[in-house]
Amino acid sequence: MDLHIHFQCSDRRLPGEQWEGWIEPLGSLRSTVTQLQIHSRSGFFVIVGDTNFGHFICLPDLSIGSYLTDYTDLFWNKERLVELIGLVDGITVACALKAAHRVGLI
Image (cartoon, rainbow, N blue to C red):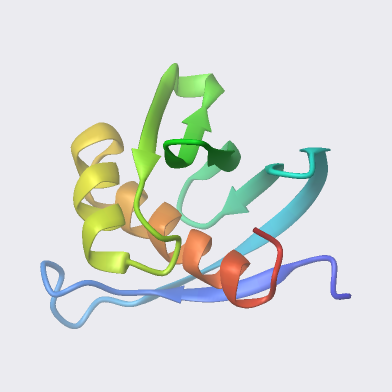
């Protein structure tokens, strides 16, 4: 498996803008919790996983955590993450989660 998962970011709120990023898998803490380093315009250490109540994300460096919908639901995850960490960073993290799920990382 490639050590870096590449992904593309865009959003209707930033017409004509597109940027790239990559994910560095850092391993699993348990079978349902994964650590990732997301690189793009900013960099984030994230912990994602599952509970009985759904998916979650934690960004420990920012003291932020939230429930998520399905990892592939860009609309909902972007809206939630943009509220917490801003427009570009929220879009980036939501796109990274979708890419990580697509390759079976989460």
